[in-house]
Amino acid sequence: MTEYIKYASNSLVPYVLYMLVGAGVLFFVRLGAVQIRDFFRAFGSLFKRQRDDADGDVSPVAALTTAVGGIVGNGNIAGVATAIVSGGPGALFWMWVSGVLGMGTMYAESYLGVKYRKKGTDQLFVGGPMYYMRDGLGPHWKWVAAFFAFGLAAKTMLATTTIQSNSIASALEAQFDMKPLYSCILVALLTGAVILGGIKTIGRVSEFVTPFMGVIYLVASGIVLVVFAKQIPAALEQVFKYAFTPMAGIGGAAGFSVQQAFRFGLARGVYSNEAGTGSVPIAHASAKTKDPAQQARIAMLGVFLDTLVVASATGLVLLVTGAWQGGDDSSAAVAGAFGQALGDYGTPVVTVSSLLFGLTTLISWSFYGEQCATYLFGPSVRKPYRALYCLAILGGAAAGTKAIWAWGDLLNGIMTIPNLLAIVLLSGQVAIASRRKSDASPVA
Image (cartoon, one colour):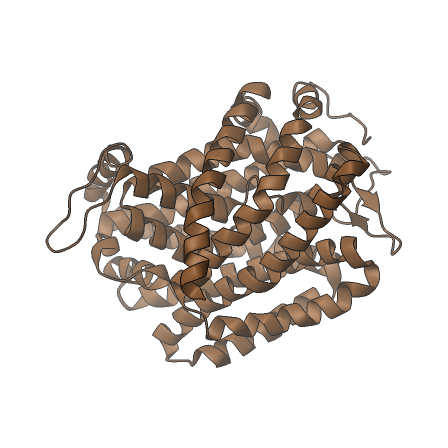
């Protein structure tokens, strides 16, 4: 079964990556390079006072931290390591490309997520691709909206849970010799303690935990880069050189082709920042705002922080220390890199980061899957879904690293295709909104 999943993933992922790059280029042009033009304006939007009559369930900042908590996960540790070990240093360059282009794509889908959101029968706001497909593109897209909702709910339940819990379990096993099953039970209990309270509890927890975990990881990464400062120029040279030229084998190790760098760099970048997959608009649809464009600018910052800051820190740490050539992948390679600069503190830092990154991702993604299940079956499914989600986390104890990442890539691709088609078809609305100078555009 694992081999079939890997084959399907390897067959589908390249085409999805080309679609994501194409959509990213389209939005870069059609939105007037909004990720560059409005970059600093986006930070200003974070602190803009919202109107008292603004609709929504959580603050714009809470929506962002929920989204960032969902995208800054073990993809930024284990995923980056897997990309560089499998694709070479050039993979980091293609991660950066996915980040820059992904900011424009994230703007588009988050704008649409807020514009077409609805208030459910339980008085909570619901939004995301299934709503802008159904209401923005018309009734004939209802079946596509349902397909997307089913695909994202399945990906959340079957892939996100196992990928994050497996990465956490690997880190805890290496540090404390803790059995994977026990680690996954602990993670399931911690996740359940938060998600049972719904989006408002998730938002409050994310506002505290997400900045805290980011600071810990970036400070530790900064120390490693200071210790190995002399290796930074050579590492950057490798990144740019081997993004466009093959890398010959070193010693007994195999070399890397440009295609490998492109494929693994973009795949890991996309899996990490989620731009174009349709998940993050679900979080931003809950924000208290009257202006979809304002929240869309805020949403772009999530991609920037995820790929161009946190993932870059991991990639550079791996390259300057040479840990990517040590034979390990996943979080073990990152732990080895941190250990070279931080000594006995290296592995604990990665362990704590893996635990926090994984927990925030699991917490945020439970909400994404829940919203999709609610779209399909109504609000009564919320609590049963949360319980099943926590049980699914236990699957990380039995999954292999490469197999579950292949499974995640496959499901990512399946749900990305209809979302990209929808936002491209609705891009005219987004283009008009992106050029407004005011933050007062109403929700349609």
